[in-house]
Image 1: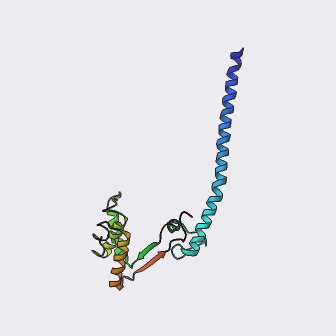
Image 2: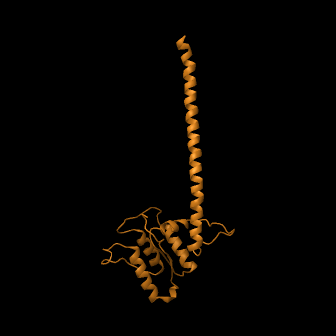
Image 3: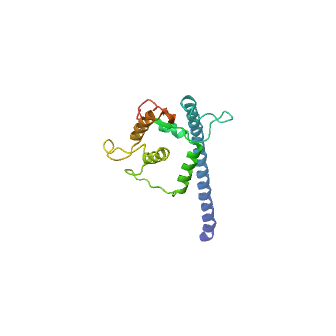
Length: 181
């Protein structure tokens, strides 16, 4: 008689375990939503407030007056770590089409190497496409590695010698304060 009642009991216990597991997972999901939703809304609010105060020229409002699409918010995060410099020169549509054609014809895989093919090298290559041999790495100052600081220094000097570039720069200052505060 005992064995006959164990089978239904086992089913009931298994059913209870499954129900408890499902309820716990749903409760966890609800708690997660409650925690994440206000944080997500608050983060969005703070990002937009910062954008409106400091980045309105870079990331203007959307047509409906709302928050624009795009990755502008990465500038907000990066501005807590460092000052960001952007440089701009005038180009013609023909020059831009030639650059796009060149980039599209190259293989679409990473060739990144910290010393010899880094992000500053990519920027140098783009600028040198428009103005050949205008930027180069510094063997002495940067031990042969292309650095953003060296490219900015050379670009600024190049622009001083070539006013026809209509060179302009954008500076997004670092947010004041200590990171560990």
